Structure formats: C-alpha cells, structure tokens
Image (cartoon, rainbow over all chains, first blue to last red; front, side, top):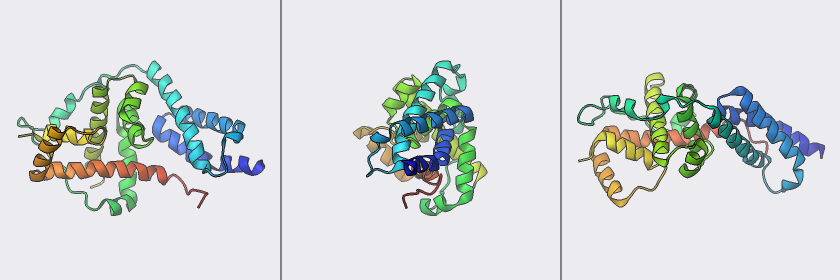
Length: 180
Length: 64
C-alpha cells in the first residue's frame, strides 16, 4: 500500500513537467497533476501490477489536461493571430518560392543529443501563440489525432491543419535563428 | 508546377493526414528538385522526434 503511494508520488515531477509543457499555465498544470494523483490513489484497484506506473498516471493526466484545455477554450478570447495563416505568405516571394529556404539540419540522431538544440526548441515552443502551441503539443506531445484536437479546441479540421502548419513553420524558423 | 508555399503546407499536413495520390505525386516531384522543401520535410520529421525526446527526457523512468 505505502509502496504504491510512494511510487505514485515519485512521478509527481515528471507529471508536472508534462502538464506544464502542454498547458503553459503553472497553476492549471499543478491542478491537473493534483487531480491526477488524487484519482490515482483513489483508484489503486484500477492499476494492474503488470502495467507501468508512469504510463498509467500519464493516461489519467491526459484526461485531466483535456478537461483543462476545454475550460481554457471556453474562457479564451479568440486571438486574431491564431486564426489564419496570412502572415506565412511573407515567408514566400510572389512566385511562391522560399525567401530564405530551410537549411539542412544534418543527422537528426545527433541533433537530439545536443543540449543547445533541445533548449532552443523549448524556448521556441514558449514563444508560439497560445492556441497554436496547444494544437501542436496535443498532436506531437500527447499524440492526439487531428479530429480529436479539432473537437477539443472547437475549430474546423482546416483550421486545425492551419494551426499545425503555423506551429511547424514558426518553430523551424525560430530554431534556424536561435540555434543554428 | 507546385510552389514551395503549397509544398510546405502539404508536407506539414502529411504529418497529420494521409495525402491523396495526386497530392503525393506532385509533392514528390517538387521535393525531388527543391532543396529547400527537401530540408523542410526533414525538419518537420525532426521536430516530431524532438518533441517526443523532450517528453522522454523529463526524468528517468523508475522502472529501469
């Protein structure tokens, strides 16, 4: 019993980091983790010995994060910057060619080992507009499919793809500037 | 001929939905001759792996 409790508590730091990346709001992240720990300790029976504590807790946390995103989506004022990809036009010339073509980043395996690259990525994620970041992280961090993201953020599929496109374009540009 | 603007949009969408046959064909032809878009394609795939690495890195798994 106590051992189970200790194993759950030991994952707190991991869960907070996970939630903060996704929610951007420290208080909302803390709440989501707290709710997760309470639900986990109350539902010990639901945890089969064969599964991994972290995987199990992350599964609960994802639901709590989606609840928080729903609350945020209800309360949020629509920011015009999040709505269209118009500003991306500036990255291309009149004939639709890159003004500054993306460069070769080299071998991805060694890139992921680079502390500077990963630190730059975190900083660039922070700099994204809120809804753009939310859509991108739901996709790449939590591994949701696009229809789920559209549903939770209450946007059309086309808008969803625009958000993801914007996020990738902004991130790669930010990384070229801050890390390369 | 597809522009880089259209190609980049489709390369991003390819991460999120299966592209149609025509889309794939025109995209491949473009990427074949465009270094910028070929690099963009690899960057987008790298971003996905990097965000996953960010998640894994959040702390050692006590299981191991």
